[in-house]
Each structure stands twice: as C-alpha cells, then as structure tokens.
Image (cartoon, rainbow, N blue to C red; front, side):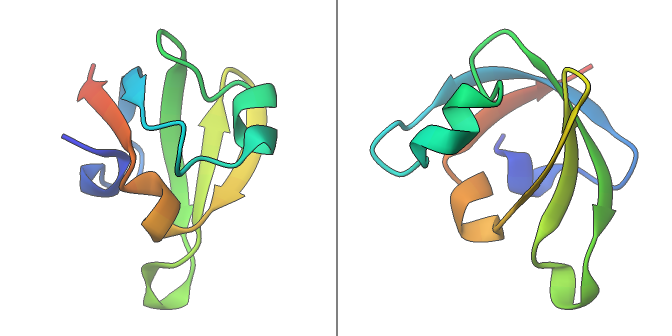
Length: 73
C-alpha cells in the first residue's frame, strides 16, 4: 500500500521509499523507513496531502506520495 491509500486521520509506518522520485528535502524532514506518518488533511481536489511525520508537518503532492510504501497501524 502507498501513502495515497491512507484516509484522513489514519496512521502508518513507512516501509520503503523510492528515493529516485522523493525530493531530498522530504528525506531530511523525516520521510524515512521506520518513521510514523499520519494523514492530517487533504486539500481541495485531494492534492496536496498534509501530513504529520514524527511531529513535523509536511505538505506533499499525491504524485510524490505514490512512491512512499506504508503499512497501516
């Protein structure tokens, strides 16, 4: 399952990321395997996605979220 599959309020653990498609800034802000991620909100038309990654708030595009593999908790 990818980050795109999460619904608002759901939490997951990042299992893997495809680093070729993930901006370095996201990796520096904690989008790494093993970290917890929670979908806080979706903007109109469901893009971007507002996330909480280990206490950091991020907004990422759904195109990028497709390359983050997660497991719901």
